[in-house]
Figure 1 (cartoon, rainbow, N blue to C red):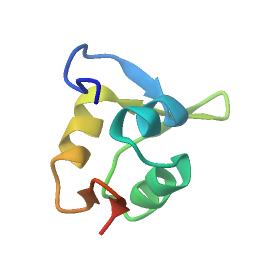
Figure 2 (figure 1 turned 30 degrees about the horizontal axis):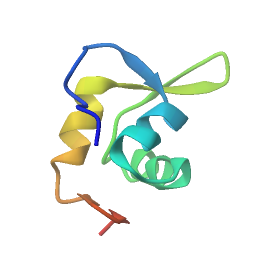
Figure 3 (figure 1 turned 120 degrees about the vertical axis):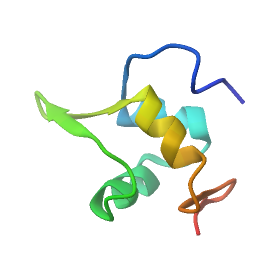
Length: 67
């Protein structure tokens, strides 16, 4: 699996989901639950890599997605 901590930049929701091995819908649910921070720009949800790494290491995330 790619290293989420490699570069400190912003990812689209789809890119973020690919990195952690879940569907974009799973990350949308995490955003809704406030387990993952994101912002919208031009109608696209953006996730910072460090926020994604924090989510990935949290109890909210497992290898299958949502606990």
